Structures are given as C-alpha cells and as structure tokens.
Picture 1 (tube, rainbow, N blue to C red):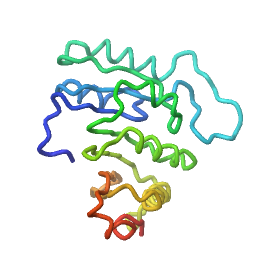
Picture 2: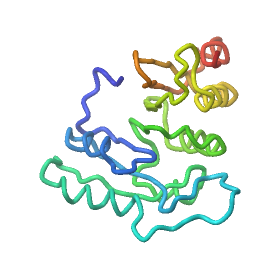
Picture 3: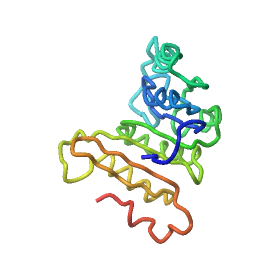
Length: 196
C-alpha cells in the first residue's frame, strides 16, 4: 500500500493500536512510531453511560509489548499515547503534528466515533500523508461494503478532503487507502469516493 516508500525515518501513527503489533513491525523497519489507543473502554460519542476503567489498559499492554520487543527495534522505540479521537487536547500531546503514515485496523466499528476519527485524521495528516485502514467485513455479503464502512466513505465524501481507494481481497478483508485531495482533484471529489 505504500510501495516505493522505505519505512526508515518515516513517522507512523497507529490508531486504535491495541497490542501495537503493526506499529512494532513498522518500528522494526526503522520508522518513528507513535502507538495510540484509548485508556478505557470508552469511545467518542458514547452516550450509553459510564465507561469501564480496567485495572490494566490497552496502553499498559502496548508498553509491555514495546519493552518485550526492544531487541528487534532499530534506532527508535515506539512511544505510547492515549488518544481519544476528536479530542484536540489529546491530539496536541502527540509526538508529531503530522505523520507520513497513519494506520488502523478495525477502527470503523464505532459509527458514532467516525466524525471524531475524520477530525483526528484531518489534524494529523498533511499533503503527502497516506492513511491505511484495514477493515474486516463481518456481514458475509461480498456484493457490497459493510454499513460501517459505507457510512465512513460517505462521511469522507461529505468532508471533501480525501481521495480514498478501496481494495477487497477474496476473503473478508478490506483496505481503505486514502490521501488528501489536491486542488486539481476537485473535479473528482464526491464521485469517486461515494459508497455504492
């Protein structure tokens, strides 16, 4: 998805990193990696009541995994940050203001968090940033995209900043690769990226 780009020296942000596996691989290839997730089981837009705060968070798990994989990492050890999407205070605390690559897996499941996710992507991306979102189709319908993904693609079209492309393998895995639209791409905005 980022062919022709060496990871060495690239800044990589993993959203909803969980265990941090993807970011750890990028770091082992020389990238300057920031691993992020929420500290609790809350998600932006959750109006369903109080959040459950576990004794050990996903952030703690990521820090343990970074320590356990220290020998495989090159010059830079990934840094772990709490990031609630859409929270400008959290965004401002991150190591970099913009990233070369932003990635996340199965991060579209919380429909109500999608506007906050798009806000976060806007804040942390630049003209050359590549955004990679891996999504698992849990619907079993190979003729159309799952609803959470269709909603996200429609929100991207409404936002008007993105040129996504979608790749679906022969199984359940779907990849969205996005870049920021340039002014010369304005003609195509809203036609190529609407979901079907």
